[in-house]
Amino acid sequence: MKYRILGFFCFISSCFYACQNSESTTEASDVDVSKVTVNVSIERLEEPLMQLKNKEEIKSFLEKHRTFVETFYQTPANDPGLVDRLDLLIHHPAIHELYEQTQQKFGNLDDLKKEFEAAFKHIKYHYPDFKEPKIITTFAGLDNELVVSDSLIIIPLESFIGPKAKYRPQHPNYMLKRYDKPYIVPTVVTLLSRKYNKIDINDRTLLADLIFYGKSFEFTRAVIPNVADSLLVAYADSNLVKSWHNQGQIWAHFIDNKLLYETNDRIKDKYIGERPYVTEIGSDCPGRIGQWLGWRIVSRYRTENPKITLVELMQNANAREIFEQSKYKGQTED
Image (cartoon, rainbow, N blue to C red; front, side, top):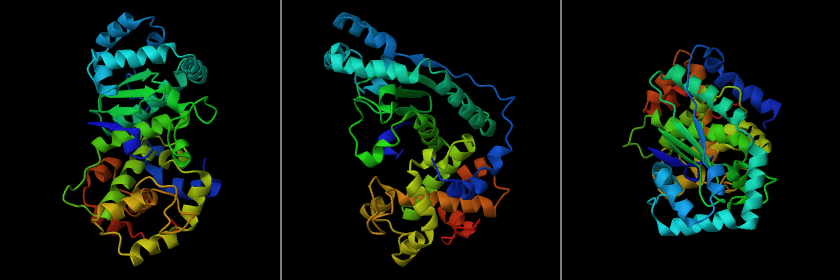
């Protein structure tokens, strides 16, 4: 299975963090991963790539890294169009400035490797058969997105320099927040969770979608227990606080409009898809509010059923059962 960041989603106030974190990290905080061993391998291709001098060297590089090329660029390694594209990339002065900025931002990647090691240890604690994906970093001049599969993770580092980058990915401002270094590992883990997130393929309801996203975020919270919730759900602090304090109103909108069992994809996308705001609820309601609401339901489910393990949660494909046993009704109290 392979996922790209744009297809999925991807600094919190003390008030919200205290409330949300208290119920969603209980199991993770009790996990001892000190005896779990993992092998995290990061192959840096941006450096040899940007040192290539001509098209013949580029062709040789692509042939040598066929799996990377076919996965990341989704084209054969001998594609002449890709050779021309990379030749322009490598020799463009402005692009080189972005590359130098990338190198300064990420350095030797030791901190990123440590983050992945910690996350992979937690996954392996819950799933002993987990096989660590190979990690490749590269430089693509903002032409490609992060790619995550069960066996391979490809990170175009320049996309995650952050707000001080000379150039930034071509996405709306409300989506750019997640294109920063602290979001890399949480985004990757959330995408990896899909392997373990069992679903009922016959359940096409919005509720099923909410629970799916809720389970994904709960998985990430358990695997990266010390990361702010804002990095998991990719919301600004203000949006998290507003969503938390207005969840009664948000919930009422879903109930009054009979949305939980809606199956129309166009309507469902208004609540789980990328938008600056969900205007149907209000101008202050952030996009993807359904994903956040699903996390609230799943968190409540775990609070009401403390003996349910993370593995058991992820294996439960019955969205209605999780919802009913959560006893969630838009409450802020836990």
